[in-house]
Length: 322
Image 1 (tube, rainbow, N blue to C red):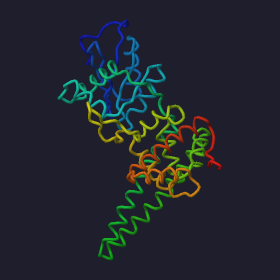
Image 2 (image 1 turned 90 degrees about the vertical axis):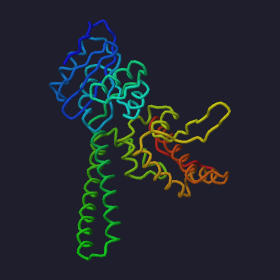
Image 3 (image 1 turned 30 degrees about the vertical axis):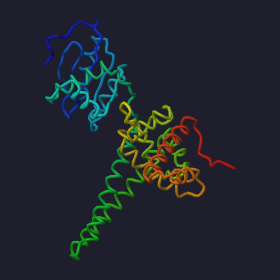
Image 4 (image 1 turned 90 degrees about the horizontal axis):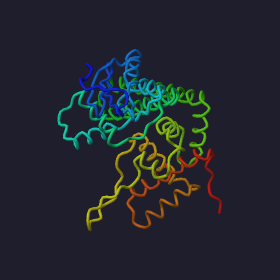
C-alpha cells in the first residue's frame, strides 16, 4: 500500500528494497513512503514507473539468494544507480538506528536510510555468463563437500550393505562433479571476455582451473580496483584494532568467504612451487617468526593483488628472471 507521505518529483530520495521470492517491499527516504509490488516483470515495470516520479539518488538492496538479480538488471537498464550490499552491513546499520523490530517493511526503510546516509557505490549487474559461471562453481563446491562427507562416513561405517550404498552415492557425485566441470568449461569457452580472464588467472602460480573459474565468476571487480580495494573485497586486508595508547592485533575481517577459500588453496600450492617468488616471500615471513596462517594470508593477499594487476594489464604472469 502506498504511504501517506509520498510527494512530488522534485524530491531527492534514496530507495530501499527488501527482496523475497514473490514480493518487493519498497521504501523511500526521507519522505517515509512504503509500498509493495510483485517480484516479477510486471512488478518491476510498475516499480520503475513509480520511481520515475522522483529524483532517485540510489537504490539499495541486499545480496540474498538469486531473487534480486532480475530486479537489479531491470533497474540498471532504467538508468538507476543500484547498490547491492552485504546483509551483515544492513543489520549492523539497523542496530545503530535502534531498529529492534524486523519486518520486510522495516528492513526496506533501513536500506533506504542506509542509501541516504552512507551513499554506497552502485554496481552494474553481472552478465548472464558470469551469473551462470558463479552458480556452476557454487554447485561444484557443494558437490565436492557432499562427496567428502559421504566418503568419510563410508570409511567409518562397519555395515557392508551401508558401505555399498554410500559407495554408490559417492560414485554418483563423482559423475555429477565431472558434468559440472564440463559445464564450467563450456560457460567459459562461450564468452571471450571470461575465457581471456580465465587464461590469465591460470597462468599464475598455484591457481588451477577451479580456482580461476571461481575468481572469474565471483570476483568480477578484478582489474577495476586498487590493490587495497581488491584485498578488502576478498577479506585479506589486515584491519587495525587500536584505541588510545593500545595497539591491538591486526586481523582480517569481512570479504567474500568463497573467494577467500579458493585463494587459500592457491596459496598453499604456490608456496610449494620452486619457481614461484611467492615461496620465497612465504619463507621470509616464516623466518621472521610470523605464524603459518599469517604468512599464508599474506600470500593470499599477494595473489589477489597480482590477479587484479594482471587482469588490469591484460597479460599473463611470468616468473621473475634473475
